[in-house]
Image (tube, rainbow, N blue to C red; front, side, top):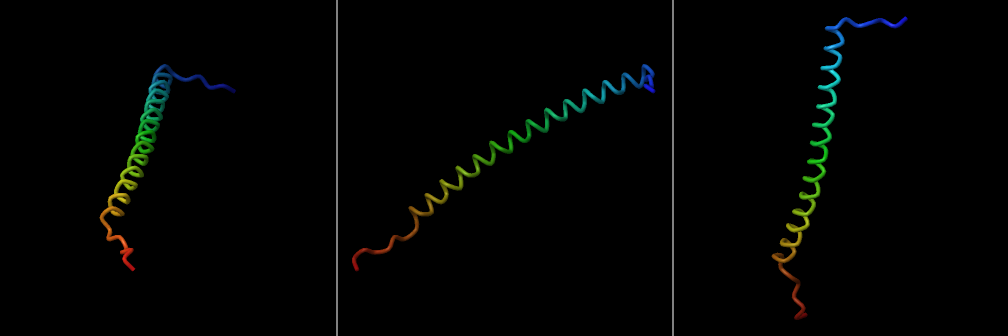
Length: 63
C-alpha cells in the first residue's frame, strides 16, 4: 500500500533532498581540497628533506 504524503510532507521531503544534495557537494569539495593539501604537504616534505640534505655535513673524502 502506497501512502500519499501531505503537501507539507512533500515540501519537507523536497527540502531534505535538496539539503542532502548540497551537503554531498560540500563533502566532495572538502575531500577534493584535502587531496590537494596532501599533495602540497608531500611536495613541501620533499623540499624540506632536500634542504636538510644540503645543510647536513657531508662526510670528508680526504681519508
